[in-house]
Image 1: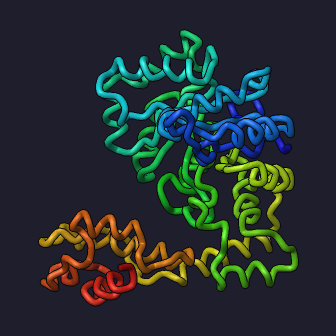
Image 2: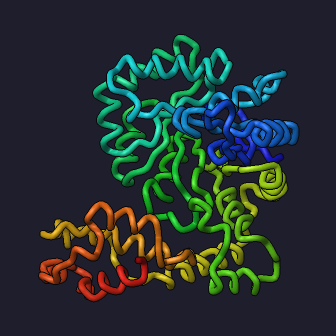
Length: 377
């Protein structure tokens, strides 16, 4: 397994980090738990083949994921890995909940310390809540007590907030959503580069965009097929990520032994400098091929909002575009159905025209809302 430097921490981690969230569930004594007949062999096989980074979280698998990982790391496996887990703001109702949850996590993971402890999924609201609870001081205290080794955060919001958070504390690591389609989304490429300048190691999540990049639509697959070197869409996506020197490890959520073995093979071929200029150009063309599948050129600027009748116009177009981009089914889409149930879908449009008057892109919003709705119901 290829190893990568964790910047200022002076340690090395495997290029492939096992994401534990997606292990299958089963029912034991009437309680839904992680199927450890699947998770434990897969985790131990990965460790036996050089993987030393395990990613879990308090809320994963109905708050059963940490326990399953703790069980898998018995018999001397704990000493071979770094554990990363996360503190969720939405489970904290008071400052003292942070320590209560950390102590619970230590017990579930069957360990005296957690290597990488992350403030989970920082958005503007989660960040403000953590600040009001004194979370940064809590992290410093937990480090001093030896309960955690490294203070970190995971992130899902704008680049501007990412920069604010990065400058607010002496972080040991951060985890961001990043892939070849998200170069200008959330922290994005600018955020990755900023971390490099600050010598803060970066762990990558959503490298396959929730699996959307794992199976290419026809026009994208045609580009891969035409390239003289044959690789799967999964390998192309991970290879592109590993080319960046700022990336410490790439998480891949595995579901079984087969996926574990596939990841081991792929990441053993991926390292900094593995992409040629021709390959980088291929991924640029792949990105453009995906984007050419967009239904509408909505930039999400929200000039059209608020809609007087409650339609979440940017959200409708975002769902519509994403389904088309990644070759997913449109009709009967559950994500769009949720918005119908919430009362902010396109069927609430009364064609008042205020949105079109405000749109800087001069989009035919009314007609596109009708089309989007008809294609997704």
